[in-house]
Amino acid sequence: MDHDPKALQVLFSAAAPPDLELRFRPMFGGIMAYANDKPLASLSNVGLAVKAPPALMAEFLSEPGAVPLRYEPDAPVSKSYVVAPPAVLADREALRDWIVRAVAGLAAAPVKKARGKR
Image (cartoon, rainbow, N blue to C red; front, side, top):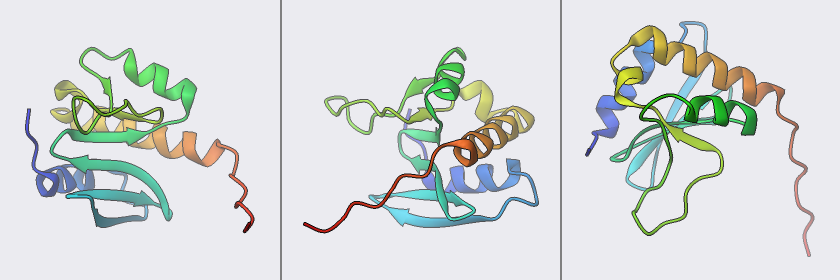
């Protein structure tokens, strides 16, 4: 299914908790959603994909219709983004639950150290 990133941005914004600091930035023909200045979701023609640490990703993938993000059929699957299934997109509370859980999961994830210059 081909999605409109701008329509997904409206949907995402409406479902997000009102106290969540969101920022959106055009990226690779889609839109990247940031929460508290951390990447949270990819909004593209593929759909709305939420970033999640491994344990949460497994939970999200257990939802019927959820799949790992893949921008092109021959591209590798993402190890950290899950495309929300149509049932989640159609249910504002379900989408809010995904957003809240993803934000909490990312906040609990260890901070990556910056690579040094070579």
